[in-house]
Amino acid sequence: VGALQQAFEELKQRLDREGLFSPQRKKPIPRYPRKIAIVTSATGAALQDMLKILERRAPHLGVVVVPTLVQGAAAGGEIAAALVRAQSVAGVE
Figure (cartoon, rainbow, N blue to C red):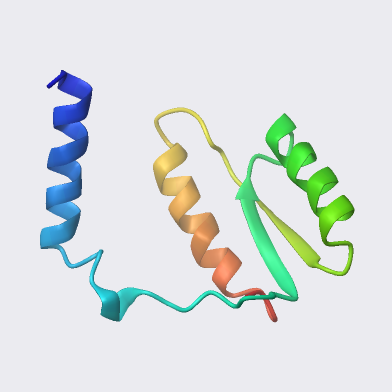
């Protein structure tokens, strides 16, 4: 087992001990959402790809972009904060 795989397994075990994988914490995902939030960099190519795909496949779907850093040492905390902001947007499923 490589160092990266071992670190991943240790992280998974730690998060499991914290109860983060428990079924009680999981929220049901609507089969046909009406409005979603995308948490990503506002300037990244990944966002543009997602918006193009959603426009083609689900033009009826409302999309809110919650911009955040996705790289660097501060990215983890920034992404977590952006997820909290996304949850507070009215109507986002």
